[in-house]
Amino acid sequence: MKEISVTEFKARLDAGTAPKIIDVREPHEYEMDHIASINIPMGEIPTHLDNLCESRDEELVINCRSGGRSGQITHYLTSQGFSNVYNLAGGMLAWKANIDPNFNVQ
Image (tube, rainbow, N blue to C red):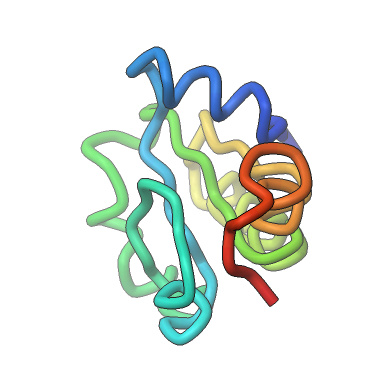
């Protein structure tokens, strides 16, 4: 499984070169706080495969609270033919610890 660190992702976000990010947390988690992302809960990903991106080669970053759910979805998308999918290592907890201590995640 390919991963991207929160520091690398933040640098790409600041540079304007960040890939599309899909947040697979539940809506109530997403509403607490989120980074520039689209919220599609983990259980709904299979019904959205054709709408995730323009091609299955497009770069995607998947995130969740700690990296567990996003890791599962990264594996799933890879098995479905998506070739450029990255798990955000450590998820939003890593974002809070390394990027934004005021980020609201529980």
